[in-house]
Image (cartoon, rainbow, N blue to C red; front, side, top):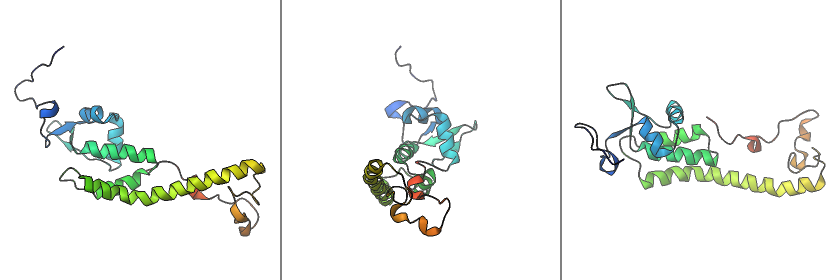
Length: 171
């Protein structure tokens, strides 16, 4: 099946499409590899935005493709969606974000990622000692209760280190 020329008035397709033209939700889904339902979810969370056309259908500026890509990367890195939304609100709406805009955004996340890498390295290093002792003693275990810091609060159950219990993603 060959390319069929569009009817009069149809917007140009493919590379000829002008940057200021808007994309349908289906086009954004196809280009980004993200389900339509996920795009609607991203919009509800304030990660992306659309306009409504005269038929009340969502239309997205082409720059939304970069935003969706950043959201997908952030999710893979375990960055909470609320953090992503906050960062994206600082990007310009009136134009496609530049490489400098994205560098500033990623620099903001670098410290958080470095801290998480450090936590994971400590966890990895402590895990060997924990498995080696085999006791999981709350009084001695460097993984669960280093230095028996929870024992200083008295007897009974205690909250574990929440920095290690933080979910990988959230909203």
